[in-house]
Image (cartoon, rainbow, N blue to C red; front, side):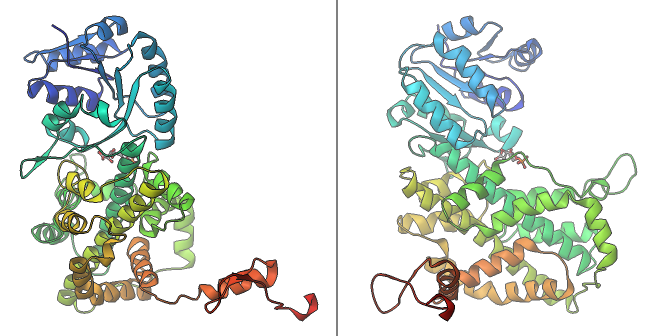
Length: 469
Ligand code: 6PG
Protein backbone atom coordinates (compact mmCIF):
# COMPACT_ATOMS: atom_id res chain seq x y z
CA UNK A 1 0.00 0.00 0.00
CA UNK A 2 1.12 3.53 -0.70
CA UNK A 3 2.01 6.40 1.59
CA UNK A 4 -0.28 9.37 2.26
CA UNK A 5 2.42 12.01 2.51
CA UNK A 6 6.12 12.31 1.77
CA UNK A 7 8.57 14.69 3.41
CA UNK A 8 11.63 16.05 1.66
CA UNK A 9 14.16 17.30 4.19
CA UNK A 10 14.55 15.21 7.32
CA UNK A 11 16.27 17.79 9.51
CA UNK A 12 14.88 18.70 12.93
CA UNK A 13 11.59 20.18 11.69
CA UNK A 14 10.89 17.68 8.90
CA UNK A 15 11.71 14.64 11.00
CA UNK A 16 9.64 15.75 13.98
CA UNK A 17 6.64 16.68 11.87
CA UNK A 18 6.81 13.32 10.16
CA UNK A 19 6.90 11.52 13.51
CA UNK A 20 3.91 13.60 14.58
CA UNK A 21 2.02 12.46 11.46
CA UNK A 22 2.96 8.85 12.11
CA UNK A 23 1.80 9.20 15.73
CA UNK A 24 -1.55 10.28 14.38
CA UNK A 25 -1.86 7.09 12.36
CA UNK A 26 -0.84 8.37 8.92
CA UNK A 27 1.37 6.28 6.69
CA UNK A 28 4.16 8.67 5.77
CA UNK A 29 7.60 8.56 4.26
CA UNK A 30 10.68 10.71 3.97
CA UNK A 31 13.50 11.55 1.62
CA UNK A 32 16.77 13.32 2.21
CA UNK A 33 19.94 13.66 0.16
CA UNK A 34 21.90 13.10 3.35
CA UNK A 35 22.10 9.37 4.24
CA UNK A 36 22.64 10.20 7.93
CA UNK A 37 19.23 11.88 8.05
CA UNK A 38 17.62 8.76 6.62
CA UNK A 39 19.26 6.57 9.22
CA UNK A 40 18.15 8.97 11.96
CA UNK A 41 14.53 8.90 10.80
CA UNK A 42 14.57 5.10 10.59
CA UNK A 43 15.90 4.92 14.16
CA UNK A 44 13.52 7.51 15.63
CA UNK A 45 10.58 6.09 13.74
CA UNK A 46 11.29 2.39 14.17
CA UNK A 47 8.03 1.89 16.05
CA UNK A 48 5.96 3.80 13.49
CA UNK A 49 4.37 3.05 10.14
CA UNK A 50 7.00 5.11 8.42
CA UNK A 51 9.65 4.61 5.75
CA UNK A 52 12.55 6.64 4.37
CA UNK A 53 13.99 6.47 0.86
CA UNK A 54 17.43 7.29 -0.45
CA UNK A 55 16.18 7.55 -4.02
CA UNK A 56 13.90 10.41 -5.03
CA UNK A 57 12.25 8.25 -7.75
CA UNK A 58 11.41 5.46 -5.30
CA UNK A 59 10.15 8.03 -2.81
CA UNK A 60 7.85 9.62 -5.40
CA UNK A 61 6.58 6.22 -6.60
CA UNK A 62 5.74 5.18 -3.05
CA UNK A 63 3.12 7.93 -2.67
CA UNK A 64 -0.62 7.65 -3.35
CA UNK A 65 -2.26 10.02 -5.86
CA UNK A 66 -2.63 12.92 -5.76
CA UNK A 67 0.79 13.01 -4.17
CA UNK A 68 1.27 15.17 -1.10
CA UNK A 69 4.90 16.14 -0.89
CA UNK A 70 6.06 18.47 1.84
CA UNK A 71 9.37 20.33 1.73
CA UNK A 72 11.16 21.25 4.92
CA UNK A 73 14.42 22.47 3.49
CA UNK A 74 16.21 25.80 4.08
CA UNK A 75 14.40 28.75 2.44
CA UNK A 76 15.99 30.21 -0.66
CA UNK A 77 17.58 28.64 -3.74
CA UNK A 78 17.47 25.12 -2.26
CA UNK A 79 13.67 25.17 -2.54
CA UNK A 80 13.98 25.95 -6.26
CA UNK A 81 16.51 23.20 -6.87
CA UNK A 82 14.37 20.63 -5.03
CA UNK A 83 11.34 21.65 -7.08
CA UNK A 84 13.35 21.41 -10.27
CA UNK A 85 14.46 17.88 -9.48
CA UNK A 86 11.08 16.81 -8.21
CA UNK A 87 8.52 18.24 -10.61
CA UNK A 88 9.40 16.10 -13.69
CA UNK A 89 8.62 13.01 -11.58
CA UNK A 90 5.12 14.20 -10.65
CA UNK A 91 1.65 13.77 -12.14
CA UNK A 92 -0.95 16.50 -12.81
CA UNK A 93 -2.88 17.28 -9.63
CA UNK A 94 0.00 16.44 -7.27
CA UNK A 95 0.62 18.87 -4.43
CA UNK A 96 3.92 20.33 -3.26
CA UNK A 97 3.84 22.01 0.14
CA UNK A 98 6.74 24.29 1.05
CA UNK A 99 6.74 24.48 4.84
CA UNK A 100 9.88 26.56 5.34
CA UNK A 101 10.08 30.30 6.02
CA UNK A 102 10.16 31.22 2.32
CA UNK A 103 9.71 34.79 1.16
CA UNK A 104 6.11 35.15 -0.03
CA UNK A 105 7.15 36.59 -3.41
CA UNK A 106 9.17 33.41 -4.06
CA UNK A 107 6.07 31.41 -3.19
CA UNK A 108 3.92 33.40 -5.66
CA UNK A 109 6.47 32.80 -8.40
CA UNK A 110 6.79 29.07 -7.68
CA UNK A 111 3.01 28.59 -7.52
CA UNK A 112 2.66 30.22 -10.93
CA UNK A 113 5.48 28.18 -12.48
CA UNK A 114 4.05 24.92 -11.14
CA UNK A 115 0.44 25.65 -12.05
CA UNK A 116 1.62 25.79 -15.68
CA UNK A 117 2.56 22.13 -15.18
CA UNK A 118 -0.77 21.27 -13.54
CA UNK A 119 0.83 20.98 -10.10
CA UNK A 120 -0.47 22.61 -6.92
CA UNK A 121 1.97 24.55 -4.81
CA UNK A 122 1.28 25.45 -1.21
CA UNK A 123 3.25 27.96 0.85
CA UNK A 124 2.71 26.88 4.41
CA UNK A 125 3.91 28.57 7.56
CA UNK A 126 4.62 26.30 10.52
CA UNK A 127 5.29 27.78 13.92
CA UNK A 128 6.29 26.22 17.18
CA UNK A 129 9.87 25.14 16.73
CA UNK A 130 11.03 21.59 17.33
CA UNK A 131 8.56 20.82 20.10
CA UNK A 132 5.69 22.23 18.04
CA UNK A 133 6.59 20.12 15.03
CA UNK A 134 6.71 16.99 17.18
CA UNK A 135 3.62 17.53 19.33
CA UNK A 136 1.44 20.14 17.63
CA UNK A 137 2.38 23.33 15.76
CA UNK A 138 0.25 26.17 14.47
CA UNK A 139 -0.06 25.78 10.70
CA UNK A 140 -0.73 28.47 8.08
CA UNK A 141 -1.35 26.94 4.64
CA UNK A 142 -2.05 29.05 1.56
CA UNK A 143 -2.74 27.94 -1.99
CA UNK A 144 -5.49 26.38 -4.08
CA UNK A 145 -8.61 25.92 -1.96
CA UNK A 146 -9.75 22.65 -3.56
CA UNK A 147 -6.29 21.14 -3.19
CA UNK A 148 -6.42 22.09 0.49
CA UNK A 149 -9.14 19.45 0.87
CA UNK A 150 -6.49 16.83 0.13
CA UNK A 151 -4.38 17.75 3.14
CA UNK A 152 -6.93 19.13 5.59
CA UNK A 153 -7.34 15.89 7.57
CA UNK A 154 -3.64 15.30 8.11
CA UNK A 155 -2.90 18.95 9.02
CA UNK A 156 -5.80 19.11 11.46
CA UNK A 157 -4.64 15.88 13.09
CA UNK A 158 -1.04 17.01 13.65
CA UNK A 159 -1.72 20.63 14.62
CA UNK A 160 -1.96 21.99 18.16
CA UNK A 161 -5.48 22.09 19.63
CA UNK A 162 -7.15 24.80 21.69
CA UNK A 163 -10.42 23.70 23.32
CA UNK A 164 -10.41 20.87 20.81
CA UNK A 165 -10.14 23.22 17.82
CA UNK A 166 -7.18 22.55 15.52
CA UNK A 167 -4.66 25.39 15.11
CA UNK A 168 -4.77 25.21 11.33
CA UNK A 169 -7.11 26.74 8.80
CA UNK A 170 -7.08 27.39 5.09
CA UNK A 171 -5.48 30.86 5.02
CA UNK A 172 -6.18 31.95 1.46
CA UNK A 173 -4.93 31.77 -2.12
CA UNK A 174 -1.43 32.29 -3.49
CA UNK A 175 1.32 33.11 -1.04
CA UNK A 176 -1.06 34.12 1.77
CA UNK A 177 0.13 31.30 4.06
CA UNK A 178 3.73 32.41 3.92
CA UNK A 179 2.67 36.04 4.20
CA UNK A 180 0.76 35.37 7.41
CA UNK A 181 3.68 33.37 8.84
CA UNK A 182 6.01 36.24 8.01
CA UNK A 183 3.81 38.69 9.91
CA UNK A 184 3.59 36.19 12.78
CA UNK A 185 7.36 36.42 12.96
CA UNK A 186 7.24 40.23 12.84
CA UNK A 187 5.02 40.15 15.92
CA UNK A 188 7.40 37.58 17.44
CA UNK A 189 10.32 40.00 16.94
CA UNK A 190 8.37 42.83 18.61
CA UNK A 191 7.42 40.72 21.63
CA UNK A 192 10.97 39.47 22.05
CA UNK A 193 12.33 43.02 21.91
CA UNK A 194 9.73 44.23 24.43
CA UNK A 195 10.71 41.44 26.81
CA UNK A 196 14.37 42.30 26.36
CA UNK A 197 13.67 45.95 27.18
CA UNK A 198 11.59 44.85 30.18
CA UNK A 199 14.58 42.85 31.41
CA UNK A 200 16.76 45.94 30.99
CA UNK A 201 14.29 48.08 32.96
CA UNK A 202 13.95 45.51 35.74
CA UNK A 203 17.70 45.14 35.96
CA UNK A 204 18.69 48.79 35.71
CA UNK A 205 15.74 50.85 36.94
CA UNK A 206 14.73 48.46 39.72
CA UNK A 207 18.14 46.83 40.38
CA UNK A 208 16.51 43.39 40.29
CA UNK A 209 18.63 40.24 40.34
CA UNK A 210 18.03 37.43 37.86
CA UNK A 211 16.11 35.53 40.55
CA UNK A 212 13.87 38.54 41.15
CA UNK A 213 13.31 38.97 37.42
CA UNK A 214 12.31 35.31 37.25
CA UNK A 215 9.70 35.91 39.96
CA UNK A 216 8.29 38.99 38.25
CA UNK A 217 7.89 37.15 34.94
CA UNK A 218 6.44 34.17 36.77
CA UNK A 219 3.82 36.34 38.42
CA UNK A 220 2.94 38.20 35.22
CA UNK A 221 2.68 34.97 33.32
CA UNK A 222 -0.10 33.90 35.69
CA UNK A 223 -2.15 36.90 34.58
CA UNK A 224 -3.28 38.59 31.38
CA UNK A 225 0.28 38.69 30.02
CA UNK A 226 0.41 34.89 29.87
CA UNK A 227 2.25 33.86 26.72
CA UNK A 228 4.69 31.30 25.44
CA UNK A 229 7.40 33.93 24.95
CA UNK A 230 7.03 35.23 28.51
CA UNK A 231 7.22 31.65 29.78
CA UNK A 232 10.39 30.96 27.81
CA UNK A 233 11.89 34.27 28.89
CA UNK A 234 11.06 33.57 32.54
CA UNK A 235 12.77 30.19 32.37
CA UNK A 236 15.96 31.67 30.92
CA UNK A 237 16.44 33.45 34.26
CA UNK A 238 16.82 30.12 36.01
CA UNK A 239 19.45 28.50 33.85
CA UNK A 240 22.97 28.24 35.25
CA UNK A 241 26.13 28.01 33.21
CA UNK A 242 27.93 24.71 33.84
CA UNK A 243 31.25 26.35 33.00
CA UNK A 244 31.19 29.27 35.44
CA UNK A 245 28.36 28.41 37.82
CA UNK A 246 26.83 31.83 37.14
CA UNK A 247 23.72 32.55 35.09
CA UNK A 248 24.19 31.52 31.45
CA UNK A 249 22.37 34.66 30.27
CA UNK A 250 25.07 36.85 31.78
CA UNK A 251 27.70 35.17 29.60
CA UNK A 252 25.88 35.64 26.28
CA UNK A 253 27.12 38.37 23.94
CA UNK A 254 24.69 41.27 23.52
CA UNK A 255 24.58 41.09 19.71
CA UNK A 256 21.35 39.71 18.23
CA UNK A 257 21.09 37.83 14.96
CA UNK A 258 18.19 37.20 12.61
CA UNK A 259 17.33 35.18 9.56
CA UNK A 260 15.14 37.62 7.66
CA UNK A 261 11.42 37.17 8.35
CA UNK A 262 11.28 40.24 10.61
CA UNK A 263 13.12 42.36 8.06
CA UNK A 264 10.76 41.17 5.31
CA UNK A 265 7.76 42.18 7.42
CA UNK A 266 9.18 45.69 7.76
CA UNK A 267 10.08 45.88 4.09
CA UNK A 268 6.59 44.86 2.99
CA UNK A 269 4.99 47.29 5.41
CA UNK A 270 6.95 50.10 3.77
CA UNK A 271 5.86 48.91 0.32
CA UNK A 272 2.24 48.83 1.45
CA UNK A 273 2.67 52.14 3.36
CA UNK A 274 1.12 50.51 6.40
CA UNK A 275 2.98 51.56 9.57
CA UNK A 276 4.27 48.91 11.99
CA UNK A 277 6.88 50.96 13.91
CA UNK A 278 7.22 48.66 16.92
CA UNK A 279 8.02 45.70 14.69
CA UNK A 280 10.44 47.92 12.76
CA UNK A 281 12.16 48.92 16.01
CA UNK A 282 12.56 45.27 16.94
CA UNK A 283 14.23 44.54 13.60
CA UNK A 284 16.38 47.68 13.73
CA UNK A 285 17.47 47.16 17.33
CA UNK A 286 18.76 43.66 16.55
CA UNK A 287 20.85 45.30 13.83
CA UNK A 288 21.94 48.14 16.09
CA UNK A 289 23.10 45.67 18.73
CA UNK A 290 25.80 44.44 16.35
CA UNK A 291 27.61 47.80 16.54
CA UNK A 292 29.16 46.76 19.82
CA UNK A 293 32.46 48.58 19.36
CA UNK A 294 30.71 51.82 18.49
CA UNK A 295 28.32 51.40 21.43
CA UNK A 296 31.19 50.92 23.84
CA UNK A 297 32.93 53.99 22.44
CA UNK A 298 29.80 56.16 22.66
CA UNK A 299 29.02 54.91 26.16
CA UNK A 300 32.26 56.59 27.22
CA UNK A 301 31.35 59.89 25.58
CA UNK A 302 27.71 59.91 26.73
CA UNK A 303 27.63 58.08 30.07
CA UNK A 304 24.18 57.05 31.32
CA UNK A 305 22.71 58.45 34.47
CA UNK A 306 21.58 55.78 36.90
CA UNK A 307 17.97 55.09 35.89
CA UNK A 308 16.80 53.93 39.34
CA UNK A 309 13.06 54.30 39.90
CA UNK A 310 11.99 55.76 43.23
CA UNK A 311 8.80 53.94 44.06
CA UNK A 312 9.58 50.37 43.08
CA UNK A 313 6.23 48.86 44.10
CA UNK A 314 4.34 51.39 42.00
CA UNK A 315 6.79 51.10 39.11
CA UNK A 316 6.39 47.34 38.80
CA UNK A 317 2.60 47.73 38.52
CA UNK A 318 3.05 50.32 35.79
CA UNK A 319 5.60 48.19 33.99
CA UNK A 320 3.14 45.31 33.73
CA UNK A 321 0.61 47.75 32.26
CA UNK A 322 3.18 49.18 29.85
CA UNK A 323 4.18 45.73 28.64
CA UNK A 324 0.54 44.79 28.13
CA UNK A 325 -0.05 48.04 26.23
CA UNK A 326 2.95 47.38 23.99
CA UNK A 327 2.08 43.74 23.37
CA UNK A 328 -1.46 44.72 22.32
CA UNK A 329 0.13 47.31 20.06
CA UNK A 330 2.45 44.75 18.44
CA UNK A 331 -0.45 42.45 17.58
CA UNK A 332 -2.48 45.45 16.41
CA UNK A 333 0.27 46.49 14.00
CA UNK A 334 0.74 42.98 12.62
CA UNK A 335 -3.01 42.46 12.17
CA UNK A 336 -3.37 45.86 10.53
CA UNK A 337 -0.68 44.85 8.05
CA UNK A 338 -2.62 41.64 7.34
CA UNK A 339 -5.79 43.68 6.89
CA UNK A 340 -4.04 45.81 4.25
CA UNK A 341 -2.28 42.89 2.54
CA UNK A 342 -5.57 41.04 2.34
CA UNK A 343 -6.97 43.85 0.19
CA UNK A 344 -3.83 44.64 -1.83
CA UNK A 345 -2.91 41.05 -2.65
CA UNK A 346 -6.53 39.77 -2.70
CA UNK A 347 -5.78 37.17 -0.02
CA UNK A 348 -9.27 37.47 1.43
CA UNK A 349 -7.93 36.80 4.92
CA UNK A 350 -10.16 35.93 7.87
CA UNK A 351 -8.44 37.72 10.72
CA UNK A 352 -10.54 35.94 13.34
CA UNK A 353 -9.50 32.57 11.91
CA UNK A 354 -5.87 33.67 12.00
CA UNK A 355 -6.17 34.85 15.62
CA UNK A 356 -7.86 31.55 16.37
CA UNK A 357 -5.05 29.36 15.03
CA UNK A 358 -2.40 31.53 16.70
CA UNK A 359 -3.89 30.70 20.12
CA UNK A 360 -1.99 27.42 20.26
CA UNK A 361 1.20 25.83 19.00
CA UNK A 362 2.94 28.93 17.68
CA UNK A 363 5.63 31.14 19.18
CA UNK A 364 3.28 34.12 19.67
CA UNK A 365 0.52 32.14 21.39
CA UNK A 366 -0.80 34.18 24.28
CA UNK A 367 -3.79 34.71 26.50
CA UNK A 368 -4.40 38.00 24.68
CA UNK A 369 -5.18 36.15 21.45
CA UNK A 370 -8.44 35.00 23.03
CA UNK A 371 -9.55 38.66 23.24
CA UNK A 372 -8.27 39.34 19.75
CA UNK A 373 -10.12 36.31 18.43
CA UNK A 374 -13.33 37.57 20.08
CA UNK A 375 -12.85 41.07 18.67
CA UNK A 376 -12.48 39.87 15.08
CA UNK A 377 -15.19 37.20 15.42
CA UNK A 378 -17.80 39.76 16.34
CA UNK A 379 -16.42 42.34 13.86
CA UNK A 380 -14.88 40.51 10.88
CA UNK A 381 -14.36 43.83 9.07
CA UNK A 382 -12.55 45.49 12.00
CA UNK A 383 -9.79 47.67 10.54
CA UNK A 384 -7.72 48.09 13.69
CA UNK A 385 -7.61 46.32 17.02
CA UNK A 386 -7.51 49.66 18.91
CA UNK A 387 -11.03 50.35 17.63
CA UNK A 388 -12.53 47.31 19.37
CA UNK A 389 -14.51 48.38 22.46
CA UNK A 390 -13.06 45.67 24.71
CA UNK A 391 -9.49 46.46 23.74
CA UNK A 392 -10.16 50.21 24.00
CA UNK A 393 -11.33 49.78 27.59
CA UNK A 394 -8.11 47.95 28.45
CA UNK A 395 -5.97 50.53 26.66
CA UNK A 396 -7.60 53.39 28.59
CA UNK A 397 -6.93 51.61 31.87
CA UNK A 398 -3.23 50.92 31.20
CA UNK A 399 -2.33 54.10 29.35
CA UNK A 400 -1.21 56.05 32.46
CA UNK A 401 1.19 53.23 33.39
CA UNK A 402 2.54 53.17 29.86
CA UNK A 403 3.17 56.93 29.90
CA UNK A 404 4.81 56.74 33.28
CA UNK A 405 7.24 53.96 32.28
CA UNK A 406 8.22 55.57 28.98
CA UNK A 407 8.64 58.96 30.69
CA UNK A 408 10.99 57.36 33.15
CA UNK A 409 13.13 55.60 30.55
CA UNK A 410 13.23 58.69 28.33
CA UNK A 411 14.21 60.92 31.23
CA UNK A 412 16.91 58.64 32.52
CA UNK A 413 18.28 57.61 29.15
CA UNK A 414 17.47 53.92 29.34
CA UNK A 415 16.98 52.79 25.74
CA UNK A 416 13.47 51.44 25.18
CA UNK A 417 12.92 51.73 21.43
CA UNK A 418 10.03 49.26 21.22
CA UNK A 419 8.17 50.70 24.21
CA UNK A 420 8.71 54.28 23.03
CA UNK A 421 7.62 53.50 19.49
CA UNK A 422 4.47 51.77 20.72
CA UNK A 423 3.44 54.88 22.63
CA UNK A 424 4.31 57.25 19.77
CA UNK A 425 2.33 55.04 17.38
CA UNK A 426 -0.68 55.05 19.69
CA UNK A 427 -0.54 58.82 20.16
CA UNK A 428 -0.27 59.45 16.43
CA UNK A 429 -3.11 57.10 15.58
CA UNK A 430 -5.45 58.74 18.09
CA UNK A 431 -4.68 62.22 16.71
CA UNK A 432 -7.64 63.46 14.70
CA UNK A 433 -5.75 66.34 13.13
CA UNK A 434 -2.05 65.75 12.62
CA UNK A 435 0.50 68.38 11.61
CA UNK A 436 0.80 66.69 8.23
CA UNK A 437 -0.79 69.75 6.64
CA UNK A 438 2.57 71.40 7.22
CA UNK A 439 4.38 68.58 5.39
CA UNK A 440 2.09 69.14 2.42
CA UNK A 441 2.74 72.89 2.56
CA UNK A 442 6.50 72.28 2.67
CA UNK A 443 6.32 69.91 -0.30
CA UNK A 444 4.32 72.39 -2.29
CA UNK A 445 6.64 75.24 -1.27
CA UNK A 446 9.87 73.74 -2.53
CA UNK A 447 8.67 71.21 -5.08
CA UNK A 448 5.25 72.35 -6.33
CA UNK A 449 3.92 68.93 -5.24
CA UNK A 450 0.42 70.32 -4.65
CA UNK A 451 -1.92 69.87 -1.71
CA UNK A 452 -5.56 69.22 -1.00
CA UNK A 453 -7.77 71.67 0.91
CA UNK A 454 -10.08 71.02 3.84
CA UNK A 455 -12.83 73.17 2.35
CA UNK A 456 -12.77 72.37 -1.35
CA UNK A 457 -12.27 69.36 -3.66
CA UNK A 458 -9.27 69.20 -6.00
CA UNK A 459 -5.52 69.72 -5.86
CA UNK A 460 -3.93 73.11 -5.41
CA UNK A 461 -0.61 74.86 -5.74
CA UNK A 462 0.19 78.11 -3.98
CA UNK A 463 2.82 80.77 -4.56
CA UNK A 464 4.64 80.40 -1.22
CA UNK A 465 7.79 82.22 -2.30
CA UNK A 466 7.38 85.63 -3.91
CA UNK A 467 10.65 85.10 -5.81
CA UNK A 468 8.91 82.36 -7.82
CA UNK A 469 5.77 84.37 -8.60
C1 6PG B 1 8.45 29.89 14.64
C2 6PG B 1 9.67 30.74 14.59
C3 6PG B 1 10.74 30.16 13.72
C4 6PG B 1 12.08 30.86 13.89
C5 6PG B 1 12.24 32.00 12.90
C6 6PG B 1 12.79 33.30 13.41
O1 6PG B 1 7.39 30.44 14.38
O2 6PG B 1 8.55 28.71 14.96
O3 6PG B 1 9.35 32.03 14.11
O4 6PG B 1 10.25 30.16 12.42
O5 6PG B 1 12.35 31.17 15.17
O6 6PG B 1 13.09 31.46 11.94
O7 6PG B 1 14.16 33.28 13.39
P1 6PG B 1 15.18 34.49 13.46
O8 6PG B 1 15.03 35.12 14.80
O9 6PG B 1 16.49 33.79 13.32
O10 6PG B 1 14.92 35.43 12.32
